[in-house]
Image (tube, rainbow over all chains, first blue to last red):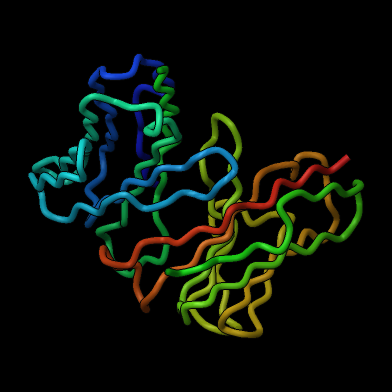
Length: 113
Length: 116
């Protein structure tokens, strides 16, 4: 069974601060997705990373996929209250036909004004 | 935009009742999924379906069954609800025969089920 460990589990910061969230595994993934879930809603895809070492930017959010495709990070610059939510990483199995993702348990981010 | 609609936002049922959770997607997606989300445990896959009338067990199928008679609709059934099935249930859909990197999950807004 593949596992994805996310850290930290909880993060509470002030508006304007920078932060990094980590997603680690001992397994190799063919791709990795990041989702954000706001209270009362389902997760929404932010980005998918596919190539080892890949970096993608989405406004103030920077996503990186590790060279070995076992880990990923999400960096937020100058966090805003609207960034508050549960951040989930999810890996797609590289072992062949697979219809499911392995989800991390999430990082709950609170950005205080 | 893909829309995944879950029939109820909140549901309260009694122990032993048979419970139906309904999910409909409007983008002709092949794959549909049922997850439950619990604090500290994350999202856990219950069942998924990659075609009409096809279903596969996920990580925690015990106590659940599913039905997919039409491509757009995927139902989760709790045969005899128990208190440990109190949870947030999330339905999702995705395109394609395989879960490709360019085929993300589109989630509904969830059904919060309480079993008393």
